[in-house]
Image 1: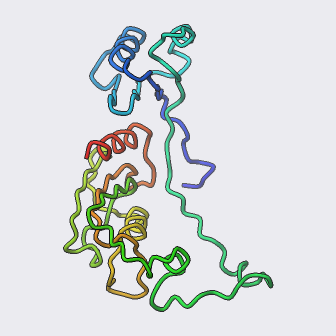
Image 2: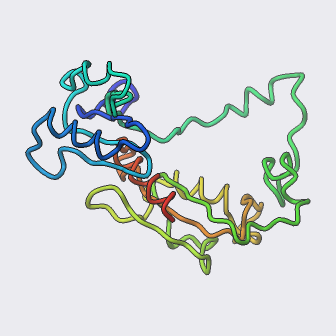
Image 3: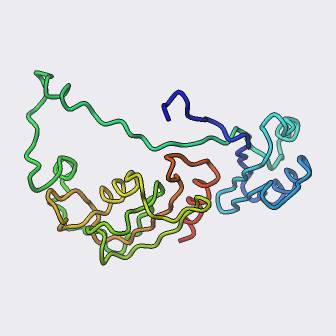
Length: 219
């Protein structure tokens, strides 16, 4: 699927609700659209967000014009895609003012640039949430780690078939002693929370992502 052919909107609405008025806002939305099923409105109370099975233009603007309205904003629910652009290293090398590339035989450039390799911090006691395409649960560099996972993509498990989520988890929490050098991960003793919010076809919608965020916050 090319970038031009990717769908942008789901046809539903993402609604931001006023703090301490989430239940009131969901009730107002329910009355506006006349709910037909449990999936017509999905509320995320911790975040103050609702996903509504109605187009933004179908949600009356008058409900948002009052100062005390529980509805703060309404926008189209979007599809989201992982970024897959790779920097052009050839162009960097061709730049006469660019510095020589560092030796990455033991540590990646990122770990050297951020001085991770000189830090005594290990990530122990820290919880890191990765909300992406999942995780390759068979990857040797994650064996023996404390990993909590959940898929928010209907009918798909957390196993990463695209690699993007695994790459991000590796950058944030990769092993101190990876199976193949160079070392690439930062918080090698952190607890990892993997939420699959982008599906095996390479995209996800806002409701999956918001649900993943709420799960991460709760945990």
